[in-house]
Length: 575
Ligand code: PEP
Ligand code: MG
Image 1: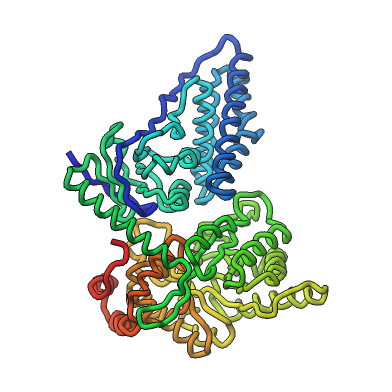
Image 2: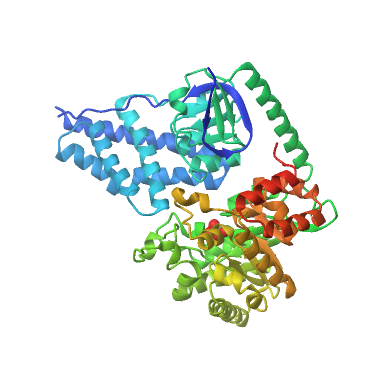
């Protein structure tokens, strides 16, 4: 009988196909005292070599199919297998405690996994998944078992798994794998990110899909709504086939807009830009017709390594993004580390409230050398296109002035050395702290632009930690309190002849878009795959009507009232 499960829509689209259960073979091991200890060590060494060989192949395939950024995950896996601390700990266990190879692998990897899981840092916690993934591969080889291979799928299926590891995801063949659903995972897990770039509909975090589905059970995965239907009725299949066709038709329509400017029905132009984390994301930006880059989160360049990136490395990354965008605006944000994004190699003391702590510009102003290195790389790259520099987490005017002064000092030094630096660089700030939104009129006299970071602005305004799911109901982009702050920032910019953008998640939100258009936002920056639907939505909106609606929303009582009103007034773009 049909059963509907709810999860998190990780990648939009609808898939209807039979289930392929990605079951892990039984990898349980008992502890034994082997007669031939050398043979156990050899067994481990052989398994290690086979696992490395497999990973090299997967890495190669990923590099070809998905690009460097995704392939890096497997470099990280290979690094685990080459890490003497990890490998020697296993050998030591087998030798010193005279245990079988499988037990040695299991014990040591469990220990490392729990060590990483207990670290107070999302990035390090994610590394636990890498170690688990890689150890499973080695253990399967030790035990002579075969991991179910997704690469062998040769008919249309929906993959069902407890979790999909990055190596599983890389093996998904888009021709046959129509979608996937998992028990665990969130929107930002590696597999969700990969699903979005592969455009495979996916729902993660259903908690129970593996318990409900069997091999060949018919499945519907609705990545738009975040639901999974196990064993759907004929009527449900027909309904979703129609939805699927509608979505495909929508995508085709959206694709036609790839080279268009973004204009409301009554001819008001806004700019639709994309957010990126690395130069590898550029392909998606260009394919989806973004008119610029509204936020390049440079911190990813600093993460997943054990020392600061050099000026040269940074220069190359920034130059690539700026020149590939071919004169289109590129807003690069200086390092925003701290909060949930830590850099272990900076060795910073633990904080009680990291989101209210030593973060972003606060840290850069103190670690002057590190900041200057980044600024020099940016200034040098500015000669290759249309760069705008943005400082994150600005709370006071003094912080902005200090940051700008350091920037100009470096600029003068470079120019004195004869280095080519653009004289057209705009310098702006993220508005993500309420004090700055409230003082926007004063800031507007000194900045070239604002970009509203609603992910943080909402967490600070509502006093609700963005990482804590128990208070996630307070993430209320439509709350009139937020709308009023957004209006203050936009009006302040316009009064001084400056522009105001938004690069928080709210900018790509279907309900928020009419409100933001009505409030006069000039630039909307969002994930690349949201650009075309947003362009389509805006082309059907009248700026005058949106203005009218925004005015009403500002006077409403609750976020729910605003949402209901917008949904009633403006039709939905995505089905
Ligand atoms: C924001 O706070 O809205 C933002 C875009 O920055 P981040 O999500 O990187 O904190
Ligand atoms: Mg932020």
